[in-house]
Length: 207
Image 1 (tube, rainbow, N blue to C red):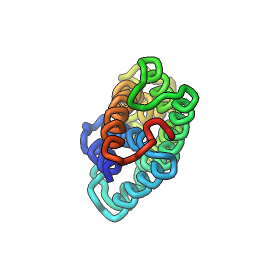
Image 2 (spheres, helix red, strand yellow; image 1 turned 120 degrees about the vertical axis):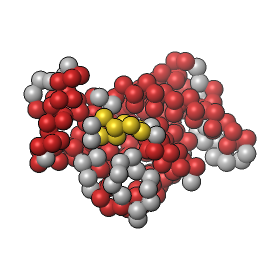
Image 3 (cartoon, rainbow, N blue to C red; image 1 turned 60 degrees about the vertical axis):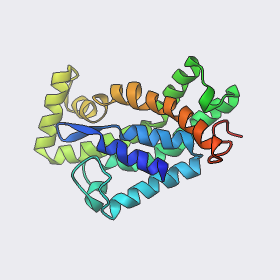
Image 4 (tube, rainbow, N blue to C red; image 1 turned 90 degrees about the vertical axis):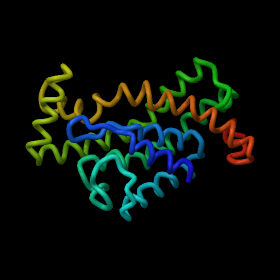
């Protein structure tokens, strides 16, 4: 439940860029992925989505229940199901190859872990873009906002780039430099503490 709570709390820390909430939700997802093995990581995400489905207010937006899982930002939520186990696998392979533990990473290991985390999160960005694009092409307000946001950011080069910018590129810097980096650093501290209490025994070093 700790990892699910971290995802929910991350979703509540937010401000909106137009119709899309800018949150710390990725931090919680990545933290869960780092602390848990792939099966447990996907289980944690599935539990989080189930909580959303029954109406528990743990989403970043105002939509609750099934509406949150079917709206224009739903692609990110469903993408977590793919990204969580992928992040878990990628980072564990790296740590095992380097004979490293999450709580004893050098700066180079932290940087590589952040890169692997970002690669693992690509399915979330892809699904987020696909779903947002679908709704934006049906909703003039969303499309107009995407065009305005891309133009303001200096990335406007047509409709498709505008949609990609509005749904992914605007959020990528914070995700990588804040959410992903912070999750890697915090995971080491949390993992060390939980292992000292007999929880997640061996997970920090993939034993």
